[in-house]
Image 1 (spheres, rainbow, N blue to C red):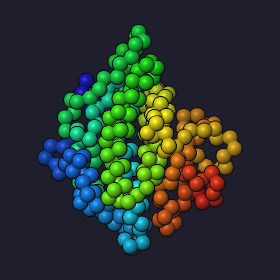
Image 2 (image 1 turned 90 degrees about the horizontal axis):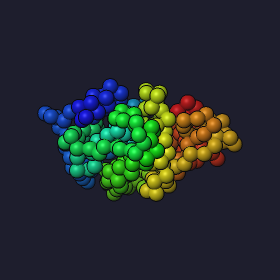
Image 3 (image 1 turned 60 degrees about the vertical axis):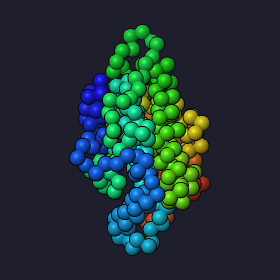
Image 4 (image 1 turned 90 degrees about the vertical axis):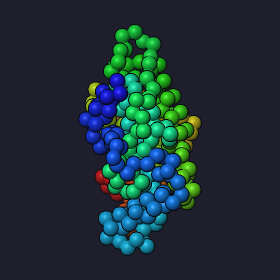
Length: 276
């Protein structure tokens, strides 16, 4: 099962892939999130944002770098968790104790597992919902997957990541939590695009996770009717939209407006960057 899951994730590419850490600079999650290594990585991301925007480093708010760093890591956590559960009925162990990553920005190991054989089988009770059917084939299995992911990610590695970013980067927890919710929606959207038959299952799982008490303040799904044009993140159906509970802070970069799902977008639609 483990080899099939890792191969399947690799075939999806992007943030879904888990890198093989042997012979690399990968370090444990706890080391990555320690004060000095995390501060160095924040500084590197800040420099990259400045270079990419043609700005001096001093003009880039450090909190924007923290936000960008966190979004990149949490997007990978969600992508792996959703794809594993939906496509393979297996959620790799994404706890802090099993995670590895390169300490530097742009390192060779974006995300890896110390022991790839560790994980959680997603089982359901519905007859005929065999391996590979995905948890969406069985509401019980979807609920089980959400409970596993919430325990291992939301109250595990994600909480550790957010606490470290708030501590070292002095970034508001509200911004980090809304980043996490928005990234979850983004991961479901990408998985549904790359594997359309699994789309309903991915969205069902994402909706359950958005309702988790620890994640719920980060954003909500609502009807698109009544929202200004261009406001609201895309979800499964055209008539629904996602709005964050906070701001990612990227509008602090010169020339960068609000994201469509920003908490401020509904009341300041003129500030939304079209097509962002």
